[in-house]
Image (cartoon, rainbow, N blue to C red; front, side):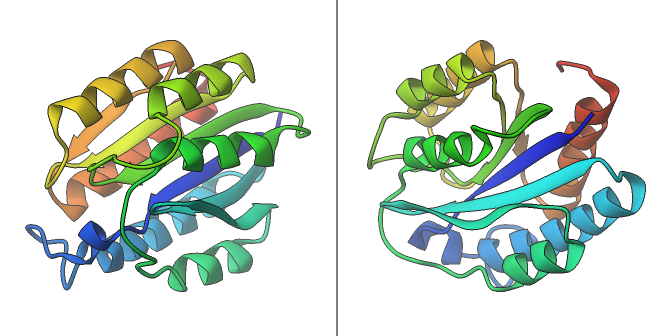
Length: 190
């Protein structure tokens, strides 16, 4: 059975800052971590399609679902800071749309440092995701994540059968991604 995984990546200005070992900044560290984790994913599993959406005050799909390791890694390498604001709900909506006509399991993994302040509220987008059969999980970089952001993430994972992993360094981010990948391929909900 195909596993469709869309990464929703925060490219707002706050991701241009350093945090712990996220150097020289969070977006560069996320690119490194994703390149490593996705290489491992493609090495281990063959029935996976990966896509990507970026968000700041708006959300844009940057990679349609593909089985091409090279295409995925190239897209990840090109990530950069895009602007002010943070619209994770818009990112989730775009990810769900990307998987609308695909067969198999549908999963999203959002990587963000919080500061949600634009677009469709995440909890509303999560209702759309849940009604579309999309499981939603989060890797939350602890730097700027506030209580309101966490409340929206936990609500989203509650109705979308996902998980919130709060990370403080690259090692925790890699371990979190590997855990989510194992859950996707073992059929575990958490």
